Amino acid sequence: MADERGLKINKTHHRKVQSLSLSSCPEKLRIHLLERNDPAVFDGAARQWVCCNWTPEFLAQELRDLRTSFRFCARQNPSVNGNSCKKTIMETDCEFEKASFDEFCQWLNGCTERSGCLSRFQRQNYWCYADYKYMAELFKDFPHLRKSVDWSCFGFPERSGDESTIWIGSAEASTPCHVDTYGCNLVAQIYGTKRWILFPPSETSNLYPTRIPYEESSVFSQVNITNPDLTRFPAFENVLQYEIILKPGDVLFVPKKWWHYVESLETSISINTWIELESDHLERVKEALIRTLVSALKKEEGAAEVTWLNPSEEIGTHAQNMSYLYQALCAMKQRTSCDVNTSYSDGTQPRYSDQNKSDILSTDDLINCMTSPEVINAMMSQALKKFGICQTINLPLKSPSVEQQKLKTTQTVKMERNSNCNSSSCSYVLDETVRSENIGSGFSQPSTEQEISEHPPLKRNCTDKERN
Image (cartoon, rainbow, N blue to C red; front, side):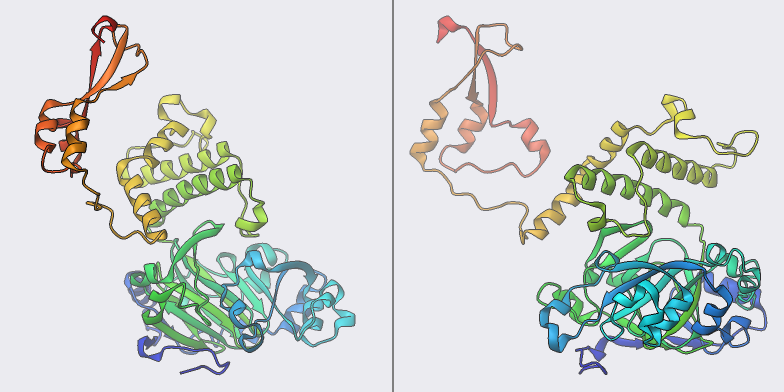
């Protein structure tokens, strides 16, 4: 089966997003949403909001010469580009240009002569997105615009435009499939229509997650959701997915750790708010560890930041990353210990350099954490899987002949003088117990670390030079 653009889709594993109605008791709805594990849509719930009257032209008139960054990407046509369309388009694959909203509207309407620097992007060949704009920053001089957003009917009266972000894009503007590690999400469709495809947390491994390009709290999928390369990502074929098309006034609830791909079906405006959860404190510690590791490895590799760092993200020095990790740990400690106070008397947080050395998580501590057996074993498992190696223990070995075994039992391996030996030379000889067990039965690898320590295949013997 194919969709309206001719892209292959598997409807067998599609589910519809459940539709809910607003509650007469917003407080109860708040509790329900914070405990809910499945997405839900509230049809027309934001229709009475003042901002539901917004259009791109209205914003251009209100904001006048205010400039912001717009993201441009060449349109993908599977019938023309073939397999090149199977690659996931990340933000690092896009071009960015600053312009006013009036110039953006002119570009949308095809008036290239009045679209300023945006005229270099041919309207028929590119889509454009002003995405992830914090309204508190973008509309800082326009309080009436920020007050046009009201999340109180969902039980969050403390949230308005000041705690929201706005997304304005042309048809086909999209956000690559990803999962947000912090909080849950409420999204209001203001203008135009958008398609959302969501995947439950249980499908994470089938979405082939990656942290490159790096962005704090965003884990991306390597799969092009609309045109997947099933040769590279075969597990995606039977993935469970939910799909919903949001119309103006609709509000979508996205639970924590749900993957989502978003695409504008026409010129659209949407507003969302991320709702903090108690588990975010632990997630921030994880993200701080990932930031430090990714930054260190990619900088050591010498890769240009534009190839691995999302344009909206900033990476500091190693000391700054360690400070960020320390602050995340302090915040977590405050949540778990009522009697712990890491703030100064004036309420400010201590800096990493202000702490006693005994209280600091050092780089050595971080290395010890990341090289623990549990972590290394997990990394080894992934590396073996990457190389297509499935069998990791009891790998078949060719057994030596009896003659070769007898020869090994009588041979000694000469070594250079070792400082641990009091004599003038050292040699390795086979342990007698191992020698007698191996003769006639073939050498076998010990199956556990305990066996290795109890029956070492070689034993160091110190001998005098005269005895040789």
